[in-house]
Amino acid sequence: MKKNDISYRVPGTFEEQRFEKLHNVVFDSPLQASKTVALEIADLIKKKDSNGKKCILGLSTGSSPISVYKELVRLHKDEGLSFKNVITFNLDEYSDINEDDLNSYHFYMYENLFNKIDILHQNINIPKSNIDNQTMRSYCMKYDKKIMDLGGIDLQLLGIGRTGHIGFNEPGSHINSQTRFVSLDHITRSDAARAFNGIENVPERAITMGIKTILNAKRILLLAWGINKSKIIQKTIEGQVSSIIPASYLQNHNNSTMIIDHEAASFLTRINTPWLIKSCDWNESLKSKAITWLCNKTNKSILKLTEEDYNRNGMSELLAIEGNYYDLNIKMFNHFQNKITGWPGGKPNSDDSKRPERSKPAKKKCLIFSPHPDDDVISMGGTFDRLVTQGHEVHVAYQTSGNLAVSDEDALKYIEVISDLKEDNKNGFNQLKKEISNKNSTSIDSKQLRLLKGYIRKRESLAATRYIGIPDKNVHFLNLPFYESGMARKLSPTDVDRKILMSLIKKVKPHQIYAAGDLADPHGTHRICLNLIFDALNNLKHEVFMKNCWVWLYRGAWQEWEVHEIDMAVPMSPEQVLKKRKSIFMHQSQKDGAMFVGDDTREFWIRAEERNKASAEIYKKMGLADYQAMEFFKRYFI
Image (cartoon, rainbow, N blue to C red; front, side):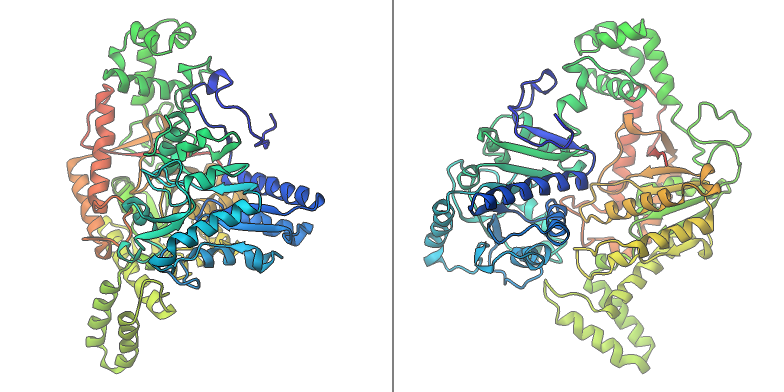
């Protein structure tokens, strides 16, 4: 099969895919996958047009299909793809929401696709939300009937929620369900909370195509990106058909394909534990993963693993290669132990052949990139402190202002404090107070209010960096333009964003760069910030100073690296844990109920401490050093 071939194949027909009940294709990146999907849609449109037929498309919303729509727009503008023979039916819409509301799916579709192509207005079908109870049932029946009268949907695009929902078919949806109004699951509403400025503003109901309506489509493509979708993807593809995971109903469809990236595919058996089903290329990375898995499965430390443990768990091939289980245990014990270092900047005057970092130069220039103004201390506050106390020149760069995460209540508090101090500018402050009092769930903050909220985050950040001990001149507030949309939906990053990053990197000429590799961030900001850093590094890789620059990726409040993935583990003493906690406390606007915490309601400092403690506990259970807490890092090679 060609790499970009997503044509349907019967699942489970190859040994390495025998656990899988849904055809899927794994891509290197969402962008590559999206272009391939757009090409299949374009080919279908052309084929239908050449036969004088209408092309009936079922469309979805959310973050997953945006790149598909961008590519379709490009094909229309650059290659003349016409949509005049296309009729579209959207999956769903929130209830009781105006069509021009920024969060409505009407707005989304016109903003991302319909306003940019030549589709006929009368050929666009999006469920209406403001339907009264008396006409609701008849409206839904007419929506389904219109689809059937046109011969059914030729190709249906889907995304998948963390509950396994497709459209708004939440857990419990029946396989024979048709278009209808539904109540939204709490997790679904929580995931949408950022766009609506809080979960209390997210509609509780929606209209959606039913499972039966979706399964009647001739071809179904489900898109999923990122590590935060990996567990539900595994359950959907490898689990039993169940109403608890509505996406699993696709197993009953004879022409469905899941289009996923490597992160979303990471829990599939053939990728997560390939030794259970096939012969493997036992490189160091796979050995690390297998030993970590085996320790967890047997509840044993590395040095207690037996020959029987290996043989019973699909690793006899590994023993045949290594020769002796005990020698393998010793080798892997040393492999993991050598990743631990209390010297993240390198230990001076030491043999660094088995250490994560170089010993020279003894004093390094370190540049920590933080997507939001608190990710640095939340994710690597202990390592941050070690770098400073060990005498390295540490810089921190806050990539975005973080103003979206400051509540109106906090902003109002600062406005009133300032207005008490500055009576002469009271009119300006009163205007901001009026703006806050008149806001609703779809209001976009004015530039003045965003500036104020950005200043709040800036001063909190300076309080934290001063506490850790770096001078203000080493703290850089980049305020990347892509973030400044005033909405949860960010602007597309441009060369202006990249040049800001490149300029700082060239100015500092760092020996170390730390960046957030947390691609499960529900805001999407971390992913954009990391991609911008990668772009900047790629553009600068020929600079002389870059030959001595190592890049370390940390993860944020949402997740941590798996033990087998990391290249450096930095231990924390009980005192450092407390110091990290206090530095997080400096970000007062994010404490005691931050605005956007996802479905995890713990405060960020609690998440950080429990995650760091759990990381240390994993090392302890594997029979390695026993520490209070640990922070994990993965090296990125430029």
